[in-house]
Image 1 (cartoon, one colour):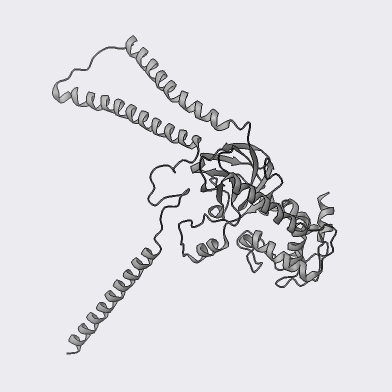
Image 2: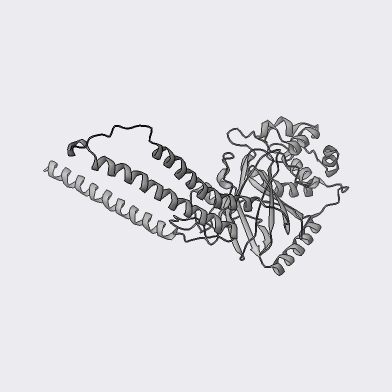
Length: 397
């Protein structure tokens, strides 16, 4: 009886486990369905096999060239292997084939010299045309410098309408939080940024690329552009969007542990909307411009620094200031605690650790002073020290 009862208990336990497993599978399938994503216009599509839909003439020519090369290579493959397998089957020993005894055939020598030469010409002519067009950055209507940095993009409008506008584009904080929690959602997952690059439609936009720390790569597939951003070098590319819309890309050079969190969002708008955006951006920059001679009090400078830290520093140094892995902590840091404020200012302006800590010269004097003051008076670093914008301005000289 005890054996029978034991068997019944075991059977019931197995039944419960199977039921729980089935319920778990149902929940997983439901969750997966709830997280189902769709195609992202201007970005990746679900189960995408082909290249991105082109939004520029260059991108169209790249796709045509890609298809042409694929067809040509397929024909060569079929021709070469077709002849090879035909020869193997037709002239196999089991059929009594006798190997020919000849060498130094002039006809064969001429054929395998001329035919590859013709093939190379057929491939080189259209490829050269596209490459030359890709490199023609002359007569641009708008010139923008894209600076890669670990791990975000800095944009400076240096020529054309909007000249003088500058900002940093960082992955949206909610998407980073979703990634940390392992709960991806949305068609634009890890592609949403706080400040997209805005350009007018039907205008030639020249992109100058460089980097502050390591090699990055500025690439937007739908626009047909990909250009490495190399520290100490200036390179360029261009595009002319044929239609308005949002186009997404990513850094396509492995640049460190946050490489996956370095998206590019190009927003193409009408000329009228672009003029409105330029006006609004200029007003916003004027409103944010600080008097460099202003002397700040500790509370207001710390509050300003908290925002700068959240936008630029928290990804590496963490909200707790403890850092992570090779990233040194700011909480308890000797440099931060040092009464000689020039040491920390120098690191913020010029970087340190061979690029592990990137330089931040693109931040204003007030922003650098604010974030330095914030770190000196946060967590356990209650030093009471203040870094003023004038201190940063003096260090830049």
